[in-house]
Amino acid sequence: MISSPHRSKRPSLPALGFILASLLLAGILAIVTWHNLDREEQFMESFLLKKAQTLIRAFEAGARTSMMMEPRGGKLATLVKETAREETIAYIVIQDETGRHLASAGLDSVSAEFSSGQEVLKTGQPLTRSIQDRAGKRIYEISQEFSPLAGMPMRMGMMRRWQNWRGMMGDSASEESRQIIYLGLYTEDFDAAREEDVKQSLILLAILFLLSSGGMYALFLSHKSQVTKTALENMELYTDNVINSMPAGLISIDTERKIVSVNKNALDLFGRSEDDMQGKTLQQLTGPEECSLAPFLRAGEEFIDQPMDCIRLDGAAIPLKVSASHLRDRDDNLRGMVLILRDQREIRAMEEALERSRRHAALGQMAAGIAHEIRNPLGTLRGFAQYFSRSDNQDPKAHEYADLMVGEVDRLNRTVSALLQFSRPREPDMSKVDLCVLAQRSLTFIQADADSQQIQLNLKLPESELILTADSDLLQQVLLNLLQNSLAATAADGEIELGITQQSDQIHLWVRDSGKGLSTEERAKMFDPFFTTRKDGTGLGLAMVQQIIEQHKGRIEVESNEGQGTCISVILPQVRITNEQS
Image 1 (cartoon, rainbow, N blue to C red):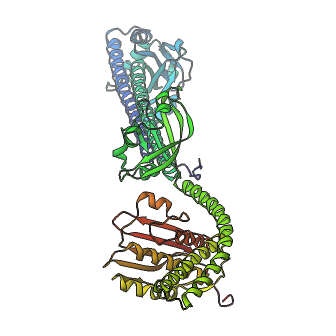
Image 2 (spheres, one colour):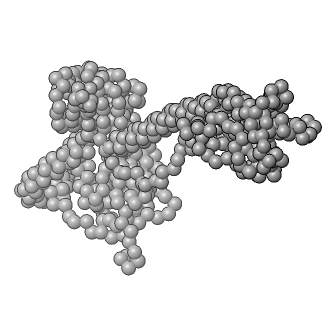
């Protein structure tokens, strides 16, 4: 099989569109997920900041209340520890602006350094950051100024009470110092929610990936199916072209010996349509008698070059040679047979021509010997007949009989001359011949005979002259012999047509008459020597015509039906002659 030319592979447009759509959806999902996570982070920070500020304000209020009601020292550390018992609070640290710890709780869980107190006091706004404890838990830290005495009159007694309550009475260094509170809050709930969102996003992404993979696989299967279908269609078309281009007929039959498929040549051989042949057996197509292939087909045997006659719808029989081979599936089960039909008409015609040539050669040798033996006594007989016709014999019948003897001797001499010409054909003397002039001259020779029989002669010639390299005398003899046969076969008021035409590199000459036509048996023997249907015929005219045409490398075709006339066509190859050759 001829391989197809290389073609660059291009991505399928549906597949490319599906991939782009999947990537777009994946991108949208990623952006939405990132946006949600970022929004959750902002919400967590805002929520924890508000919560921390609320806790710090509540802590400051609790510190003021506790200080007013119970001014004994050391209560700040207790309040810090009690407040840090809340599960969501990781630690609470209170420092002064110099970095000295005033009170703390939960510091065992963290190891990070705290923000500079000066920086917190300088900004005047809460500072936030995210850190991790020793266990890896995330902590959201808020640091801001701790002012439990804010809004209260700053009297000396109030400052002493505060210092006493926080347990630093007499520490003059911290009397005027400002405090910073560091509050760490666990983000476990928010982190769990974030992880759940991430997990759901990953699940959605996995589902999208599975859907995309399934879609891609479906597109791949669809594309592969389409490619396979196209390949099968191309293979079927290629196979059909090969089968229909075969010079022989092909028929496939199933195990019941019924026809499944036929190629164009087989349809032409049988002269039927494909619908008319499918489902039938060869027996139904070859006539009432049993098909010669039936025993082989019933036995399922393979065979080579078995003869069979194909009977067409018009009744014509075509000789065939048939070969058969098994048709099996991939499991080696017999599915039917394939029959190859070869037309034997040309081979049969060649065999008949060879046999005819062999017979002609034998007859020619015999005719040459007979002609020599007959011609010598014929000359003597003719001389005596002429002598008697010129004598003074008074018998009135003597002259009549003598003239009759001369005529018969002349007729016999013509037959002997034809025999000699048939047995020893001369080589053609090739020269330039104008076929139109040759045809007109041939009709002139038989015009008188045609007029006497009331037969109309028609001449059909091309507008321009037709020049052929041939033997003018031999072609003249061919046309005269064919015209004489048509005159003998055509009744009064009939027609004879002589025509010439050029087709490609061939010249066609034909003689068509409206005579009685030829039977099948007469057509089979018409070119045999000594075969004639005329009482005064020698049976050598058409044999000589065929001999001359074969010398000119041409051929003869005959169309005839009984009662419908005859058309004999002569096809000659045209050899063009240049001025130098002429």
